[in-house]
Length: 130
Image 1 (cartoon, one colour):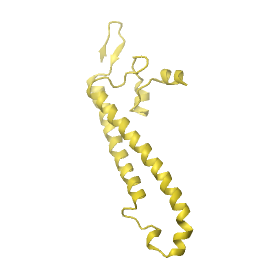
Image 2: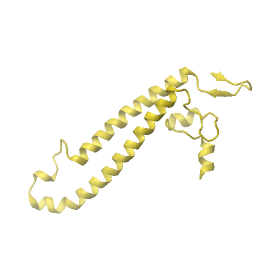
Image 3: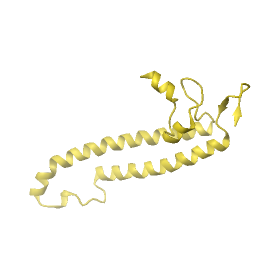
Image 4: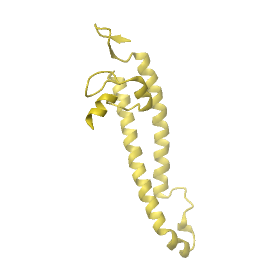
């Protein structure tokens, strides 16, 4: 633990940062796989969709396919944003600023970081922003 004069923790220790890094890397790997799956669904890679069936089925399913493609597109964009946030968290770990609230400058609780490893705001700061 790295501590200030008042016995208040200033940042997470290198060991703790290493633990967070492992968690983030695992989440990042899963997020990238999910993103690829969504991307392939949108572009019909490895698909056995209605495009290879009779025109009757194509007409009936066209509306549902368009809606599904739009929803998958939105999910893919959210997943890409999540990946970007996780990558930014890795950078903060490397420069040892990970886990420090960007509003208050205080440490974000370990429980919050375990639940939301890319968090940049403490619960208090997040609630006060609303």
